[in-house]
Length: 74
Image (cartoon, rainbow, N blue to C red; front, side, top):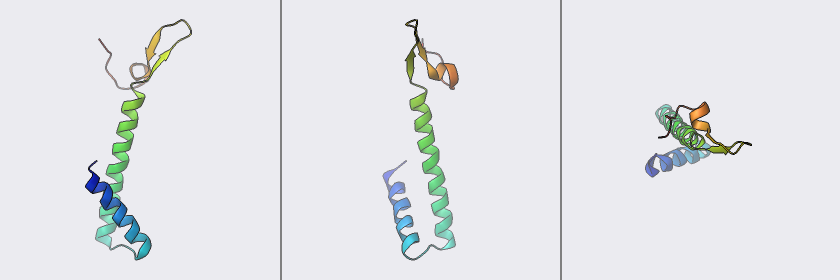
């Protein structure tokens, strides 16, 4: 997400606490928040899909390949 959008989220949050938002600003805030949350979730899933675990027998298992939507490594 671009820094300008994050800054806009913060501006709207401060304005909401200080004086309230118009209906148009509330809609904008809601859309920006949803985009931000989707971005955070996507980044988290990508990180979790890249976790490797060492099993007790010494083999390495990628959790993204086992549980996620990641394609198998070559």
